[in-house]
Image 1 (cartoon, rainbow, N blue to C red):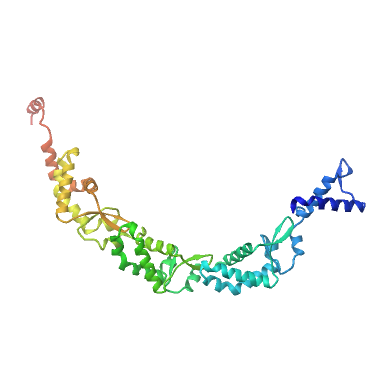
Image 2: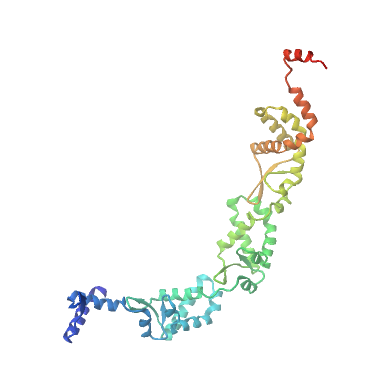
Length: 378
């Protein structure tokens, strides 16, 4: 042990002194003999390897041992080269084994190596020490995880066509399994959107079990290998597919009644038949709207909204892939915004009526101004 080495250092120093060997240091051109404590420190530094290169210590190790550490010297050690080649015979079995069952395979590999007299060693203070079983198992797992990655399209080609792959990119999106997955979820779409958000977990589990029963797996890529997802990750992927913000609103709009008014941005919403009808419908209220002072327009908004609701027309907004009916205040705000945004266009279309309205609202001229006009000769 480290604290008990002082006696060994003293023993070595006395042995050297008995042979007439001294430890000297230079000072002002003279060589002076060291005190005992300095000699012991020099001996300690030799054993702790501070003055020795790692390559020199490796030379004295058995060639078949596996060394833990970084650097080209360790990487090219014969035992480490053999270790990498040895693992290739277990590679296919390792990647086909579920994560929870891999510790048994790792222990089997370690025992096989130990049976051949091969040890896992790490360096500490210039000395190579055998690792514990857990550290050796960790080294085996790391060796499998650091295999050279292959290009993603090449790995996808080797996957069953019906598996569902997790990840971004056009290659994954167009994978036959992912295309089938999107089509498969359509049969559950109506049921999903009718269930409140907190209660959808049971539906996600049902869908996952249905897919697993068909032999379809959820896979993610890690270090060039495709690994099966745990149940929670698979259900999260199903939830994301239903609530996917990247999907266009056009797909969801197709399933809505044609007369409903949709809140949102974009050409699909603007060209929805309900929104087109809404803009035309408001024209009949345009004159009344512009004649009403701003602070008295609230009752007009309510009147228009009730008229639309009486025709079975709703104001809807999208949330998590589902269209929800707006409250009255939001619907009134949409009516107000539509009047404001279409004002210029309607003014051009109804310029004659609007000018007549402006003239009718103009104040009469003062009597002095009328008298001045009467005096003007034509």
